Image (cartoon, rainbow, N blue to C red; front, side, top):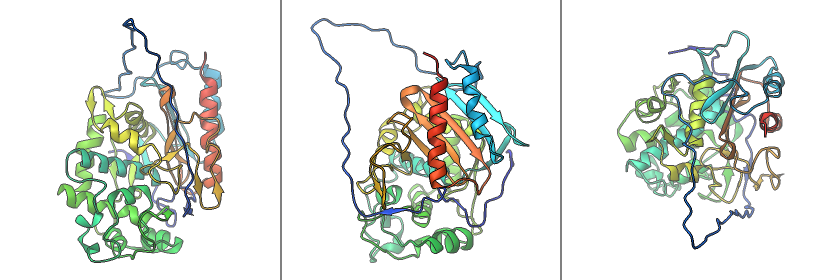
Length: 382
């Protein structure tokens, strides 16, 4: 296993760069699509073979071979070289078109990716559902029996992965008492009360997400880390680990230790609709649902993924795109300190930036993700 470049920050454990925002109101969003023309004569069209993912290390290619202007693409790491960035990677059509490391960080280093780990946790839920261990529309109390007979009895697993569970939240409770303080974070999180009816209030709630650890382990009968290694990490060649709390519980609101190459693998898995060299690691239907608005309270949020779509979050209007220079189908796993796994399916593109804890904020991170998309897309030729 790789060396760990950073310890967890005391107060910043798994914060999505200051995104402790909430919403009680919905905003309508209409999706549109193109309809292919039909005719009377059958037409056979040649289709390109899907990009092949690497069984071993990423296949590195010259940027020009991947369709980039090399000098223009170099503007991406130049923009991100802020003293905190540790690595940047660009994957196009299944090949590594660019990879940059900063300071002592190398391809063999890994680090805490903070709340970008949440997207991994929701993916494990999707795999467990596909294997018949759970249904996301069933009450989480089927597994978290401590909630039976309480106001949390009707909270569904879907509520937990959509952040509209209504479970108790304050900043101090979430980031100080639970994230930085509780030795048994799962028990602490399960023991909190219900603050709002499920489905009526959106909150970026780390404690609620940590209860997924109990759901996954009790549903599958497996240690979550072992389950993740077998079902997700090993099939796509990710050499990563998940941290545990002092009581030995795997973390679901943060905890994944990864480098840029492995983070890019996770992004590429989703770019390829959950398939890895012909093996359906994650159901394609789950990938599609997870990366669409999961509720009406924050249309910019899926199943623990951030979406480039409109909606409302608290008093912050998101009626325009979060990342106006990125396509509407872009989505990302984001974490404290500017951890970014940006997926742009329409361009067969994944862009990763990892960095030290404590850098960036919600406004800065949003602007930086947009600039990452703008610079990368601007470097594409033709």
